[in-house]
Image (cartoon, rainbow, N blue to C red; front, side, top):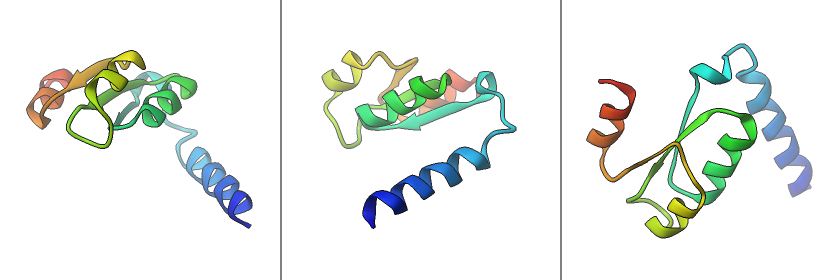
Length: 79
């Protein structure tokens, strides 16, 4: 049951965003899983270093950018 729920949820999320170009998408996450998911989709990913995983793990996953603060994220997206 859990695998089927997970598959349906992933399909729902994927189908919700099919009209958004990858080039205009930024995934913001705090885990290696978030980074890998964004890379597989083909979009940029900002890794927040104050979250669930150590900074070194995030660095090794090669995100588009590392953000230590929300202000870092705002600078990256041009705010």
